Length: 269
Image 1 (tube, one colour):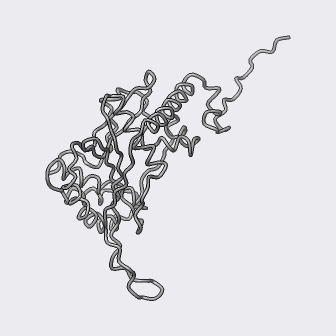
Image 2 (cartoon, helix red, strand yellow; image 1 turned 90 degrees about the horizontal axis):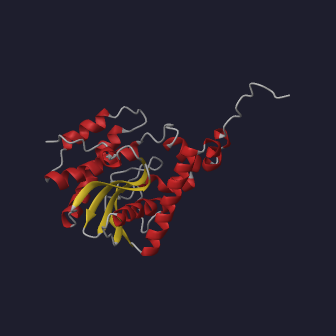
């Protein structure tokens, strides 16, 4: 069934047209891990390459997208993808054992809350050649929905800082395009923690089957103004980085990036 690559992140090259993109999922990192943000996004140093949890999230997202677009899930394509992961640190068998139960609880929710669009890439240019955006998990009416896989046994009840930045960035970009978003929603899908046995006592542990939890936050003008100012600050910082090499260490808060003095070829007497 599967021809489209449901496992690759849409970077929107046909939309950004080679402009620098402030990724929605990376906005909070600009403030919380500034040096690493610059090194990864402006110097091209390798960032996060994925782990067991992130690949599990990828296949659950892929299964939902398949279901919305085609009405079914290509389980063989999912398993082929998992078995193709070459990172030896990734536990393939864990992913294979988890994604089925997680989709089993996710798909009934999706059927009851069928998205209008999935994985729509949105982008807005803030300065010439610099903009913000990314691929939105799901849009339904006036709401953004984002699938979040989690290992938490007690599901979250509020937005984290990083998720708020991510979803509000999407809402802000859509507003610039004349599209109103009133709510951002995190749809948590927990792992299936059942049939476990204590290593110490050998007794069965409490079961925590996969479940769904939705956290909703209203999009306010105050929130949009705040995220808009953050995105404009990042855009101006990127522009300054590009135009002023001698300021890069200050922008990145990293003395290792301070430009070395140019050699003096001749000394004036």
